[in-house]
Image 1: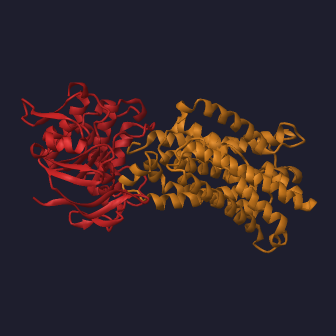
Image 2: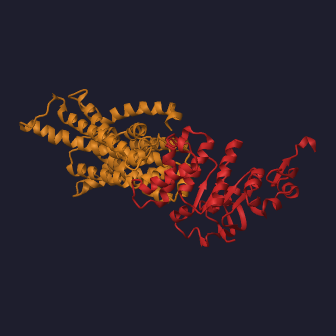
Image 3: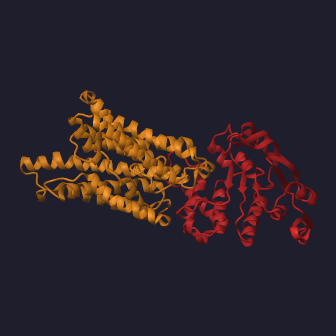
Length: 330
Length: 263
């Protein structure tokens, strides 16, 4: 990165424009075709109460999940690690499901809307911790182990999910299933505001560790030789990543592969310097999720697809491609 | 001569398995000191102990008289830089890699590179002759070029001590002499103290002012190359029959292997 990163300013400007365009398109496009009017009360309500919240949530969640992906890929030094593929989302969803099934009355309390995010965070943090301990035990963060362990965690948490669902009443069952599929249909403005603030904060916080992530790309020992307190940096980054994932899952459910797909392309476009990679991934993820959600709610209108299906399909295909072309992508 | 590095009763290793036992050495300032010894003798462990990667189980390591584990990691990395056997082939430009040598000098939360960061980075890229490849990526350059990039990055840390772990082990002779000549030039011109683990006894003899000969995690001999490198010592430590002659040009000891079928 040069002293005046002119190229980076252009990248950020272009990405901002794309996000704005995606938001505008999503605001106009609906099951009733392409139009934007605030003339009568119904139109106004559709745009401001239905479409706008989804766009804002898509912006926050898409950006935050991409940042979580970049952080995890930096920590594990592998481009295939992201909240979904390592079972971290699974952990979060399990936390959320336990909360829905057994703690539903708590959610009615004032400020109760924060309980779900907190349980989501607890679930994702637990998985990250277990993942890291097992990875460290098997020495030197061997990536095959991390991915395999992550898949195992996914299986374990989905088995536990089935157990919980078997024990649940019909009412909570429906909510859980909705969560598992991932949706931006959220009308709690408190949660949307929290999502926006938290994703912005997580981007800012992770940018403070951009240099550390750059150094870590050379390996932990090399980073230590450059004066990075790696234990401290890793601790903070793990907390940021699990906080983000836990929160995103608790508001929007499991939206897979955003954290894989976006950083992958951003590394090609913007390079591997985390000072530009983090922010460009955030913006790219926002635009991607807003567009995916627009497709999800219009493609078979008046019915609606879960947005997780769209991101899962596009991301899954890239994941397979990336695995087979591993040499080129690492 | 002052000791830049001093190890007092150091025992260190991984887990319960100790690779270094009861090490007491002083490494003099402004010299090139070579760590030699057979595989598994503890050369790399010694470098990791001096390089503040491995914390001694007991005993202390002092740099300029202060305990390295009592100074912060940042402060330590301004004083000591490390060149390892090879670097991870990350797809980042050589320039950005060399710039990383400035990390210890960054202010807290400094996101952009300062004018001084740029100037110093350009300077050391010029000094090590890697200007032509500075925009290439680390994963697309040769092993020799990567070692030069490491050298530039290490100099960019502006250290008083440079630790080198087998810096030439997989290079051809042109690049071996290239990196070692540069090391020697820097040592002579700036007084940079160098400690290198090196396998090749002849390169050690040519380039090092002092040698530390290790075996089984202990220091067996230390002194100037012409004292250390004689056939008796080498046969004792390496259990290999050799003949030691003098390099006709440099008059430094040169070790010749005697093949088993000629004994």
